[in-house]
Each structure stands twice: as structure tokens, then as C-alpha cells.
Length: 289
Image 1 (cartoon, rainbow, N blue to C red):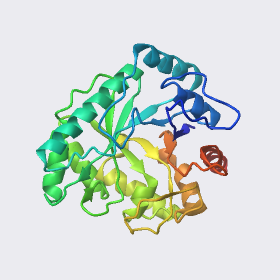
Image 2: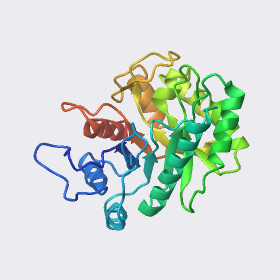
Image 3: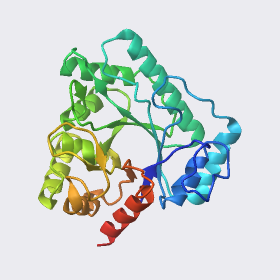
């Protein structure tokens, strides 16, 4: 079972009071993943709130690759900046988004990271059809290195954001010349109206994904419970089994036979009293049962 969390690469914070990362570089992510019991996971390569990308030295990249190979099963996923908007009709924002994504796929190649995950973004008035066309053409501007795949992530679907409907993701895959796959976020899908709170609902959602997109495109799952009810379009994550998806839904999802080989990455609340280690252990318990 491949399960892990979105962990920090910063050297300024340790994941416990008594242990500090042994390396002052991006390899901190490997240390943190091991500490919470994960064997795969996700990172930001820089602050997701700014356009500026931090430098990754050759030495840091080599350390990350070596420690990943020695300590983890993989894969790693790089999550793109929150500022990236592939659907935008604004030329300036589009150019910045493409530039940022190019830096991410290049960083992934240097780090030996298999996937770069991105939200489609919002059409901001251009309309759904034009927004999806914009996203596909923006992705086609990228020069993606061999061994790296871009994943488009399912969205909660609030406002003019696209990706809440599986058909949106399928359309971008169809329109783009670039080979693209998908990351399914369970909290986002639930918020967008796909009911994952029961075994029947999980079966229906997996079937809908397969019909619209194809399960062969599902390369990663962001496994999150939801603090809000199905169909509310509200994106706020809860601990595994403690939100509106609940234990029954999470149990059905992690044990679904069509999802057994898909890596699970948690973006659940990482609080002092209950964090990634608790949630990863909970997922493993559910899979065992």
C-alpha cells in the first residue's frame, strides 16, 4: 500500500519537538515522510503563495533522489503554486502560469519526481468551454521532460473554477496534445457532488470516473475527508473518517478493488494533537479491515 502525506521541505520546522531534519535541503521531505509513516508523498518546491521559485542545487537534488530511493517506495508528487491558473483568459496570468509550470516540471526531472499536480483554475467569465480550451492550450506550451507527467486535479467547483465535473478533466485530456493524467481529490469530488459517503456511492463515483475519464488516467489520489456536506462546493479537509465522507465511505474507498494500486496522498489537517501520522495509521487500519 502506497500512502503518505504532503510534507514540508523547510528546514525551519521539525515534525516533532525532539527530532530535527538531518539535512538543510529539500531532502527534509524524505525525513518528514518517514517520520509520519508514509512511503510516498507530495511537496511544494517553493512557497505556493508566490511566483518566485527557490533554487535547488545539484547537491540538494542528488540528496533528495538518493534518500528517496533508499527510504521510500514512491512516487513523489510536486504540487504547483496556488497562483497558477491555466483557464484564465488574461494573457499576463497565462504567461506566468505557464512559466511557473515549466519550472515545476523541470524541477521534477532534476529531483526524479514522477508527477506535477495542478488545478485547472478559474475561467473568470470566459465560460466553461473557453476555459477548458485555455487550459489545454496552456499545457501544450510546456516542454515536459521524459519521466515526468502532469496531473490535472479534480476541484470542488466553486465559482468559476473548473475541474469539479469529471467531464472537465476528460475534455482537457482530449483537447491537449500533451499526455496528461489525473489526481482525484476525495474531498473536492465530494464537495462537487460525487457522494463518497457510502460503499454504493464510492462504486458509482469510480464508475463515473471510468466512464468519463478512464481509470487508466488515475495516477494519484488526494485522500481527504470533508468538513462540509456533499455538493456544497466548499473545500475544507477533515481527518480521515471524521468528516462528512465518514468512516464507511473512507473504508469503501481505500478498499475499492479498482483503486488498490493508486498512491494515496493525504492533505488532512496537520495539528499538534492529531496530524499526518494519525491519519496515515488510520488509512492503514482501514485497508487491513
